Image (cartoon, rainbow, N blue to C red; front, side, top):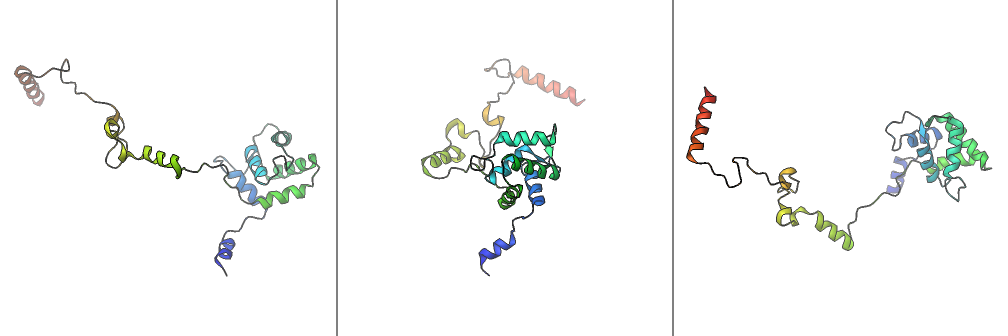
Length: 188
């Protein structure tokens, strides 16, 4: 058995509507309780090439059908979803079985339109130079420690000591004696 066959047998795509319904209901939805939102239905239909000009179904079609079935709710369960698919297929004069087969053939939800990091070309080189803290000079260099982590406010603000009335103030002997007297009184 080759490596390709091993990998394909390890990760089987779900072949039943219930399992796929659960996967799409939870995809990107932390609050899912086994019910699916219109947003996730649209993702599923789009991935199955049903929600576009080729498929003949529009976002308006799905929204209208969704609101017919669940009324004022924001989510639908599996039974309501099957009714949704049948209604949508009948409205588009297509066999519901054909819609369901396409949804099952689509498989698990996949990420699409995910931004990839820029690593090559002039943009990649410039971006690397701008984000490499080891290359910073002058005042900008003071904002980061040796490991390249930001120092926070310490790196942005010059903290002055408030030891006198004005910036040129220097303690004289009398002030130093007063400070010593205060320290002695505090210890007693």
